[in-house]
Length: 277
Length: 346
Image (cartoon, rainbow over all chains, first blue to last red; front, side, top):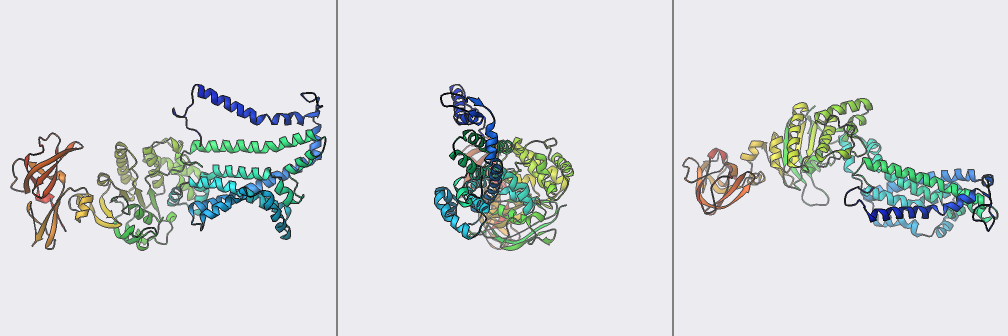
């Protein structure tokens, strides 16, 4: 929901100034930690007493490539997209069933869906690891499966909110206008819940994108994603510049995605006042 | 494109309640005519429309459109259009694409569907609004678009579920004119659900009174007002005067006098008549049914005034011009022309 610009909610005077100040302060707070990363990324040498890098350069790029950052980036993206699609689809189906259908023990199912958040990943993953190994599940598939479960609470929650605000009368109206089940899904339901789907997929992508423990343990070292490469490089000495560069490249895709999702959501809310999610 | 709508013996009980929402309801709407279904809230009116549309299936009874039982036909293939109280315009589509929805769904290319939609927008006097977003419309405009969208699907039967009750009275009058124009133009068979008697009288050819899922009365608008089928039907039509009496040999006798009651069996029966038709005079009127009483109260009803007259055990209601000099305590003669009074059993 975007704030409606009404005389009651519009801030003015001191309130307006304070809000601006707060926004700038927050932006600085979020951006500040990235500044040393940027500096480090392009510091060929940075000896102790100096405030700024003593020698600027792009040696970090070669170093990062040598660590295998490019294929790791690709693997992370694939994993993120796969988990985003799977978790969003499952979350949406679960949420729709819980909101509209007669799910036996709906409350229990809801709690179960949120359980992966409450459970320490270490404890769950160590057990699951053995099961997956015994079942001969390929490590990449195993990682994707476990991460999908970990992302499910977020997608299910986002989609439940969306379906809670979703009015099925639109579907009835569409049917009376001649739309069959698939047409209703394609022309009415999906467009109406699209912003929520985008949000859910973004959260699920983030879960997979930033995961370390599950990928390490379930992947058994075979699925080398970006966080694994960064961690191994950070463990060594003299890799500060490469680590900084790789960390920066890990920040960029989610930020770009977030901007995209927000822009998408804004375009939708301008066109639809009734449907919020 | 219009078709007869024949409902017979429709019965529907929802699992959550014991009382049936529809109870053996039969009704026929001739092709191209408009019947208003009138009844208090919760009387099963909306369920009736949903059953006809195929959104609910009846426990018993049949819905026939153009002589064909549609029980096995899915809602999307029945050729029934529906406009709800809320416009339910798809928020992700422009006004034009909302109206073009049915054609797009049936596979028509976008350009042609939009061209046709433009024509229907013109029918509801919203030409040029096609490019607008749904959120930019007023309540009345939204309902017009909803009607255009329903009409664009060329339904054989158009169901209107209190489509104007959220609008203010001036807009509602506009919409009544619009509906009249649409009927003259495309003449679909219309079933209009409303709780507003005046709206029913204004828009429809016939009125069906429904209460507790049962059909109480069905007839022309004039019949519904002046010749109701039962005492309850008279009450639902807003008739305020009911004088108990008895029928013997085809004559009804009551405190107001005698009047012919043809076709009624001997036994208790009630004389009902409209407060609008009652005459209030200083002197008794020998030719009519009447009684002498005292004005008990007076209150304004729109541009007219309602006068309550007590005559013995009887309380009678009459409407008089607001300039009338009657005041509480006045002795008056209350009369009703015999042809405007109606006798119902019970």
